[in-house]
Length: 198
Ligand SMILES: [Ca+2]
Ligand SMILES: [Ca+2]
Picture 1 (cartoon, rainbow, N blue to C red):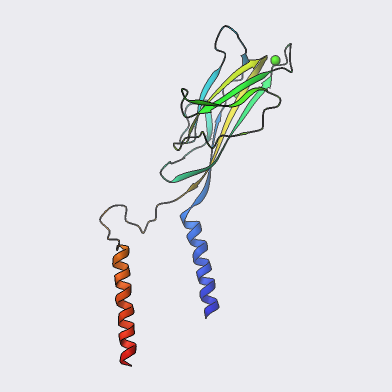
Picture 2 (cartoon, rainbow, N blue to C red):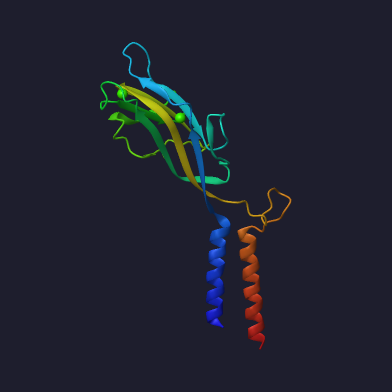
């Protein structure tokens, strides 16, 4: 009998874990027509754009959306950039800075004058993706010329579904812990009294 109880208890834990939180993945691909990025001493040669995993921002975006800040806790976020050389003169020295952040006015530099052939497959941007599921990105070329192909933001989160048994507002009565404790004490007292009578 004890064995069965342990097994049932274990199953209960498994179901509780599955029922409370579920891993979900959201992807936003920003894919404009590829364009040449060049360095210019005279003008601002940077290019900025937005990512969101809440819903598609416009026709240049595609992916799997539906991030909900009220149920989803972000566990990881990565940014993958597709930058490639144009095959022109002076090739091999194409370099860029990369900035990310909450708003265009408060960006953090995550790449410094890096050759585009050497940039990582993806950047960890967990610190910079807002709890709202958005990210601003700025690509700022520092040397040579190269193409911007696309940019992909992948966000993983734990989704906690609201408990259907739990009343959403004040119309259901949830016993307070103190009330429950008093009730428990009362039961224990009744059991002891009954035993003493025997
Ligand atoms: Ca080039
Ligand atoms: Ca493209």
